[in-house]
Image (cartoon, rainbow, N blue to C red; front, side, top):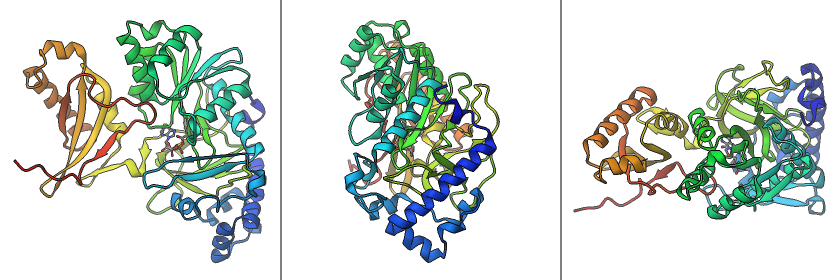
Length: 442
Ligand code: DLL
């Protein structure tokens, strides 16, 4: 363990540390961020009203739109002279959301990522290949500083340039690798195409996250690459990667770095807390951040938490693997489906590669879902390139039925020939909304 003092802290001790830090954070935002001061005043709350952790529910939520409305630096609690780094996330609607870090924030972040690497099975003596993109995105630089804080050797590859990634794996022999699960699969696929068995590589563990992925995808990654795959979670608004991490011992829930981030789970409709073990939206409050402290941030991510002890010895609250974001949820005739649920089904089907896309299309006035899947080379040869072949028709029926019974929705399954579904170099695009396309008239 990298820092047992906090990772194994007694629950009561943790709660009093959190309360002390929460009170400081609330005072700090009240004194330094106009947005919070106005909100607190409107609600008639003062920082002195926080006498217990439960009092956090008196505080207002912060949402992505608040970041956009205060773009770029309006929510910062320190002057620009104390900011040493800016990051952001691109989002869908134009302007990025911007977050800032003081030197202490950068150190805290490096520490939680170092803890994460150790939890994943990493050691100081490792060479570690980092395929997360370097730039405004927090993935690349976030992992980078964590590896260095641990004292291991980072190979700062960033995303893309897959041939080069493979050469480096072959030559530098990293023990650990980090990236989005979809990109790591892409690397494994290209290794095979180059006649290299990814299972023979030096890789022993992978730290995967930044996008939703399923238990079935974990199995696929572990089988394909012969490594242990653990889930890392985070978001730029809270710090970046390292908010929580699975341990390699249990691979059962992500340990939240609770001395720095306070977690709540709420019902996204009623906004009330849901009991432990029940699914809801994750809400985080930063407890130690200086530049960009954030109160009750609604992540949009669906998960649940447990406070049960873990076999690894860590005592921190664990969150379940994130099912998806509320904005990525597809609602088909009243039924809610997350791409990760579709993935779980697809990855169990033989002769399909683990790359897929969900297309939303409009036929006349009806919204329909096309599920684009890709058959593997062996099947392609078997059917001699004929996508109307009876084997494909049989597979199509089978998948349609499975989707109907497990996800409760009808989808039109569209088969693609090998190598045609776009491969990811970072966060995979799972949902393509084509409903605005002009219908083709013939
Ligand atoms: O994705 C930070 C990160 C980098 C996490 C590298 C893990 C590894 P953002 O670009 O701000 O930050 O996107 C945050 O990505 O709210 C989730 O919806 C999603 N996400 C992140 N990690 C996971 C995960 C980074 N392990 C948004 N499982 C979050 C599912 C995840 N979704």
